Every structure is written in structure tokens, then in C-alpha cells.
Image 1 (cartoon, one colour):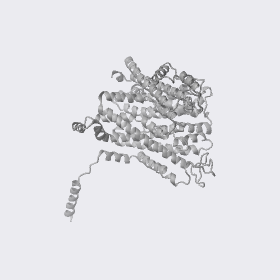
Image 2 (cartoon, helix red, strand yellow):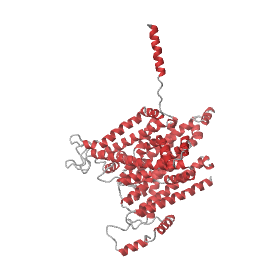
Image 3 (cartoon, chains in turn purple, red):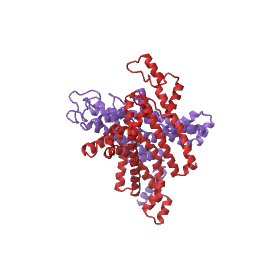
Length: 303
Length: 307
């Protein structure tokens, strides 16, 4: 009996030893680190909630963001009337407006980040891959623009071409790519001497093909991290511009526009400031936590 | 060192040239001219105006005239406030912006460095955690949100400080705008300082100093401070730029008669001339501040000049 169970146990051990240990890729490792980061996971949950609220929420509400409720002007938040966040001077439901504003802020952030990623990655990869004088000239150009406060250019564009949401998207994105270009160039410099790039060149592939097929896919890690860190910056920029009156215009609204309107009347109707402000701060906080978490997860030596 | 400063100065020329060129062509790309108002001007009057502002000349010539004027400090006419040129309006606003921005800069650097050193020396203490949350707050709260919150708490609820206005530059009128402007930078500087200080305190030469029997105070002040300051110094250039753009909001919210407010009013009134002039002025200021910071950096770290 004893002998048999002993043999059984030995067989079990052999079994466990023989099943090869499952390897973990770097990405899996990073994701594991990310998942064990409480702040980052809180950020993910908050962001998902905000996205759901912003895109599904408005259709569940009895009020929409632009039509006045003639029975409730300047109404403080209350459960009986169904205006959970109160209404503004024009009787528009603040909850609906805040959710809609969050939607616009998220959309601006998404589009502008995409624009900045596309420009930054292309520019940086070409500069890093081509190297030499071309690289020097391209990066000097980046240094030059870097020294200038781009927000002033955005305001200038808004003043001259009129206030247009799509121009806003494009302008912010087109001016936010500089750091991305620098990071991508640095990474490309270290990749371009690898054997598989040699091989691609030896097999006669064109420069753009090498860049987009062999270099860019290997940049995904740093690009994702930096893009995640760019999003909160863009949200903050958009609300800054909207606050000043150069961003999203009535009847459309964004968190910055709502905060600007609320800040004018916060002594009498404080809810008009606090609710949009709370949404903006939550949004920025969750984006910041996610960005930091991604950076820590993919680049642990940094800390 | 001097050679480096000169070289660094020469690099500002293409920066400013590109900035001015971009601004000029953005302005020329604008749909419609500055004199296409709601009521059309009589053609003769319009022609005279255009001749006066050189708008009838070929584009290249206009560009040359414009660059020449900017180099002489003439930023052109304001299209809305006819009595004042752009340069005159900037001169009116500049002292206020410099007082507010400069004070905020000094406050941010001083408190940031101090808080960073404190956080590094007493890591994971209660004040360190308090500092970390303050940093997070400073990074998250945009200045246009911080300003009304401060106005509400310190101005309205507590009644300690005036909510806005200049009040002949009395200290109590300056406190809130400076606080709003400085807080995010206190946060960033203290974070940089704390990280750098922790790293330096772990390096070999500090261990040597400690094994010689030196106390914490002389170690920090005499040995660790200078190398740990490097990241802070390199942040000062961008910080000056952020302070300037931040002062646009702060001046508007607190009703201070600085350049930022002229800029916003001009932008909202579509006063092209004024907006363009102010943008160029801001750029020159920021590029110059960056230049000063870079030279300061080279002076602190001789490795930079030898490259």
C-alpha cells in the first residue's frame, strides 16, 4: 500500500516535471505587472465607467443636453425633479450636459492622440532610420518647434480660422507630436542595426517598406506608453482652450466649456462648477494612473 | 563657456525666424482681410488703408517689411484699439505680468526645491505622503479650476484675501494669483528634486562623505545639492513658458491688467494684429528664458560645454 502510493507520488512528480513550464513573454509579464498595480486598475475601472456613462448614459436620461426644461431654471440638484445634477440658467439638465461634455472631451483626446501618434511615429522613424544629416536636420526642426509654446499657435489658428471643433482636434494633434517623434527616433536608432533590418535591406525592400513593416511594429511598446501619457495632456489642453472660449462652442459643450460657465456663477450656483469639475478631475486622474501604470509595467527599470 | 553661450545664442535666431515666418503666413492665410468688416468700406478708403499698411505690395515685400519692423520692436498696429499700437499695449501690461509671473517663478522654485529635499530625506514619512498627494493635486487640477476654488475658499468663505483686482499691487491682492500659478510647478519641481536627491544620496561619493563622519546637513548642502539640482534647472526653461501661458488664464480670472488679458481680449475680438504681436512677443520671451536657463545649466555642469 505504502509502496504503491509512494510510486504513485513519484509518477505524479515526474508528470509535473515533464509538462514543460509555460514561458511568459515580455508582454505577458508587463500585463501581469500592470494588473497588480492597484492605482492603474482603479484608473481602468474609472475610465471604463466614464466611457460607458458618456456614450450610453445620455440615451437613458429623460433630458437631452440642449433642450431647456421650462419648469426648472437654475434648479439645484434634486432627486424628485430628475435633474440629479441640477440645471443651468437656461434650464438645461446638467447631468446630460456633463455626460455630453465628457464625450466631446474623450473624442478630442482620441482623435488628437491618433493624429499625434501618426505624425510622431512616421517622423521619428524616418529620422532615426535615415540617420546622418537628414536625422540632424529633422531633429533640429523638432528642437526649434519644441522651444515654442504650441498653445499660442492653437489660439492663433482658432482666432484666424474661426472656432471649429475639427480644426481643434487637428491643431492639437498636429502640434503634440514632438515628444513622440523624439522617443520613436531614439528607439529606431537602436533597432536599425539589428540583423533582421539588415536582412530586409539585403532582400531589396524599399525604405518606406522597411520602416512601416519592420521598424514600426517593434516600436509598439514605447509608443503605447507615451500615447497613454499624451491623452491626459490633450484632455487638459482641450479644456483649457474651451475654458478660454477658443474650443468647443455652444450648443455643443465640453468639460472645459462647462467649467468656464460654472466658474462665472459659482457663488450662486456652485453645482454648475462642481459636477463638471469632478468629472474632469476623475477623467484626468484615471488617465494619469493608467499612463503611469503602463510605463511602470513595460519599463520597470525606470523605478 | 563664453563660446558655448555665444553658440547657444546663435541657435535662437533660426527659432525666432521660423516663429515669425509661421505667424506671418498664418495671418496671410486668414480668410478675408482686416478691413472686410460687416459694412464694406468705400473702395478708395480701403485702398488708402491698404497702402498705409503695405497690404497692396507683393507678398514677399510685405514679409520683408514685417520682419524688418519686428526686428525694430514694432509689432504693428492693433486693429481694434486704434489709438494704441501693439507694442504700446504690451508695454502697459508687461509690468503686471512680470510681477505676477516672476513672483510665482521664485515661489515655485524655492518651495519646490525645499519640499523635494524634505521628501527625499524623510522618505515615506507623513509629510512625504502629504507632499505626494499635493503633487498629484497640482498635476491634476488645471489652473482654471484651481483659481475659482481658491477664490471661493480664501476669498468668499474665509474672507481672508480679495477675490481679484490689482489694488495698487498690495501683497494680499497678489497672493492668490501667485499661488494658483505656482502650485503646479511646486508639484513638478519637488517631484524632480525628490527623485534626483534620492538618487544622489545613494551614490558613492555621498557614502564616502558619510563615512568621513559628516552630518546630514553638510552632506546635503555641500555635496548633494548641486548634482541633484540639475534636473530642476533643466525644467526651469519649460516652466517659464508654462508660467507665461498660465498667466493668461490667471490674469483673466483675477482681473489683472497684464499682457495675458490683453491677449485674450484681442483674441476674442479677432484683433489679428494684437494677437500676432503678442504671440511673437511671448515667443521671444520664452526663447530668451530658455537661453538663460541653458547657459545656467552649462555653468553648473561643465560636461555640457566640453561636448
